Image (cartoon, rainbow, N blue to C red; front, side):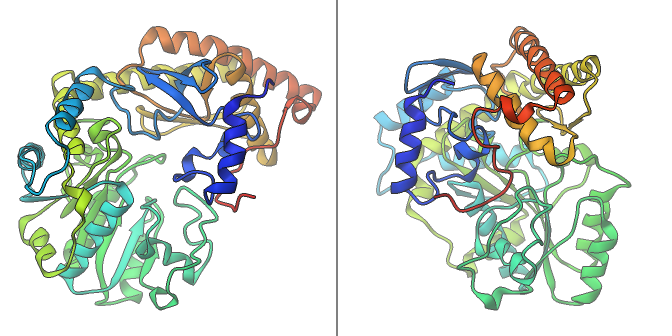
Amino acid sequence: MEKNKGEELWKEAKKLIPGGSQLLSKRAELFLPEHWPAYYSKAKGVDVWDIDGKKYIDMSIMGVGACILGYADKDVNEAVKKAVDNGSMCTLNCPEEVELAKLLLELHPWAGMVRYAKAGGEAMSVAVRIARAYSKKDKIAFCGYHGWNDWYLAANLADDKNLDGHLIPGLAPTGVPRCLKGTAIPFEYNDIDTLRKIIKQNYGEIGVIVLEPIRHQKHKDNFIKKVAEIAKEISAVLIFDEITTGWRLNPGGAYKEHNVNPDIVVYGKAMANGLPISAIVGKKDIMDAAQTSFISSTFWTERTGTAAAIVTIKKIISHNVPEHLIRIGKLAKKGWAELAKKHGLKLEVMGIDPLATFHLEYGEDSQLLHTLFTQEMLKRGYLASKQFYVSYSHNEKIVSSYLEKVDEVLGIIKAALEKGNAKDLLEGPVAHTKFKRLN
């Protein structure tokens, strides 16, 4: 493959910035080591131009799930530009904070108060702090991926593989105080018996239960309802982390599909179409506990995020964006399954429709084949991986053209498997599958 400026800039970045990027999920090594374009100059709709000016169609993670409407949405941009022109920061508070709070509470009639942050991980830390302040208990039982903060990574102090099944394996708790060992205890999705065991082994000590209501796995045996019942039985604060799943199945959280309300729900990513804001929405008596703990930050009051969130959420509702995401996601998933059958490939399709995922089931060679898929799709003008985060800017025509190229690439993969030369076709290292130090 031809060298690109992004590849060279990424090499330089790793010397200047620990880990190369601020976000693990944007590391070039996770996609196509030594060949991923890494940096963009412009993004609009689903089109991305790298710093060489080469254009790609994004059929991967759309700003790591942040750009639900598509890149540089006109309505959101206008609201943000107006906020900047009128002053994005001031000694006084911006009125958009109140307008957004009212909008969020209208969508969550069980809730009574709202707090804001800028990123998902810090919003989860705020939610956990509030929940601990209310319950007056330190220990947390959790399921899913919830960010980089101490309360979460503390799970790996007890066993460095505790978090491996919760999205990203290999997360090291280096720098997390050893005294936090045993304060965060994981349980697997759909495994209600493990949660019951945790409660029994830590009787009277679990004050918070944290859960991603859905990700890749299918919900079984009223799992979410049972988790909520356990939380109520032990008077634990139930937090739903909807940072990734929020706004994609309906205007709000995926939890609404199960008719179970949490005590707190946390949003981020998609709620402002790429502008930095997150929200903690919760029951009034629980949220009010925030006033007993110091939770405060200058840039949580910045204006562009709230302005963008108001427009994004209103557009999600008025344009029925979730219905569109589900329809387009179904098309991609159906296409993957049909093409896998055509080429005789072992390929599993997973995830909710707007967060579609596939996995080539070839044991130790699986990641090599996924890397080869990304390499060949990049040659054909697509940013593509085994994940497809659907946006409102994706349409049937785009998916149809994408699947034509997927057909070609799966044909290459099938031939490589038959010849046993997949490794020879790869023009760089195999993509990483877990957190690791970069040199």
